[in-house]
Image (cartoon, rainbow, N blue to C red):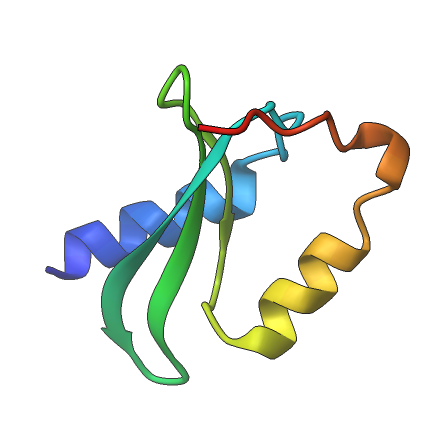
Length: 80
């Protein structure tokens, strides 16, 4: 399990956020680490590629993350 944690954290630290797509998928990944039980992974729903990884699924983290994305970078959503 430790190898998965190490890989995820190193991936998060090295990863640059990709542009948002018209359809995103959000998944929670259980980490069981001190101060961070779950990470939040944002995927491109169409391609399945990860867009970004947040260190926590808590509202304080996700609200701050999404509020910092300029509206001009947010594509029109697809309604599925």
